[in-house]
Image (cartoon, rainbow, N blue to C red):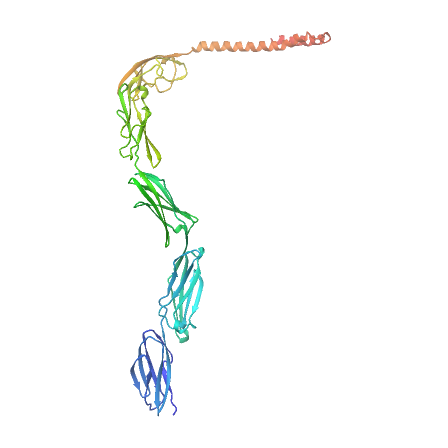
Amino acid sequence: MQFEVSIWPDRALVNFGQSLTVNCSTTCANPGPSGIETLLKKTQVGRGPQWKEFLLEDITKSSILQCFFSCSGIQKDTSLDIIVYRPPEQVILELQPAWVAVNAAFTVSCSVPRVAPLENLTLTLIQGSQELRKKGFLSVPGASRVGEVTVNISAQREDDECSFSCHAELDLSTYGGELYHSSSATKILRIFEFSQTPQIWVSPLLEVGMAAAVSCEMAEVFPAKDTTFHMFLGDQELSPFFSWEGDTAWANATVRAMETGDQELSCLVSLGPMEQKSRKPVYVYSFPPPVLEIAEPYPLAGTAVNVTCSGHVLTSPSPTVQLQGAADLPAPPEETAWLLLTAREEDDGRNFSCEASLEVQGQQLVKTTSAQLHVFYEPRLEESSCPGNQTWVAGAEERLACVPKGNPAPALVCTWNGVAFNFEALQTASHNHTGAYRCTASNRLGSVSKDITIVVEGLKEGIGSTIFVIVIVALGMGVVTTALYLNYRPCKMKRRRLPYLQEEEEGQCAVQEGRNLQLT
């Protein structure tokens, strides 16, 4: 007997874990036993004389379902391929290691877990903007059906900071489905060269509390701009300033040691997973400037002044000291150098210095403290700087000359005929300025006065004009006389020449003499 068995749908593409309704039917008018055969969980949800409908639940694996009917003792069946798919929801990219030494090998791998069907998957590794490797899985053996692609590469400098990514495609168009895309997160590869030891530059001696410059340098490092410096003096971390150029990086810092004794300066340089550390011993000493004391820094002339020089109490060990003007021998550490003097006017502005010497770790250190002595004395108006008799020239610009001496610097006031006179201003001298002036110099120690006589010298205008005229006339007569002499002298000389020339020359001279007489 002829009859047909059919199933709907005729192809099934099911997302992982979803359900599917299947209808199994026949053309037999009076069918016998019928049903479906599958390993999937099934539930009959409907039936008719020539059909049955089943619900397949929680489908997690691709399989083949058989639908059968019997008609007049004859059984026929048909099958349905159920394809389970899982889109590539997670694409995992790994770089091993993330930091790679130049010329060393690194691995780029990409995997897609829980994707199906695997034979429809394509993975593409991308370096920068270029395709590095593309892999399909049609011919992958059943035992190795894993969605993964791996590439081994030798690292070069130009690969530094290069980006890597992985793109996955699941093409279900052969089953009437869609094309699913997914990509990994981008990862950056770092390449490095890091084989040298940091070099530290620091003075072997540091003074406590004083700022000192330190430096740490790393050569032949790549990329130099990405190095990190950490510098320590003992447990004290410094704050270095970072710089780099080419394949060299360095850090400069300022250190201020707060404790004396042996300490260690360390420099830790890191680049990615790599670290290099250097150490350098330093010795911290205490050597404040020596103490210079002038018992009375502003004494009066004639008083005794005591000057002492000693090492600072915080200096360790105690220094030797020397005072300018004292014995030229270093004083013992527990003593001071001193000088006792009687203050004189010429000592005003005298400089004293206290020099301390300290030997630290075989080096001789010297520090000096200076001070100045100021001697106070009463004002004086000396003849050398304030003459009592002064002569001015009439018509010239003149100024009263008077400079007082004294400390503190005295103030000077001058009067003329009882009226204040501006001695600092230039005066156009005239006979009216002739007379007696009185100047007084004063400071907080006292005052002194002095009379100054000014005489203005100069000729009267009438006499001066007469003398000028006489001088001009005399000069004019002298010029005429000289001219006559120069013209007459050649003729006298020519008369002494040979006789045959005498007559001719005498005639010429006679003419010349006549001209000279006319001029006179």
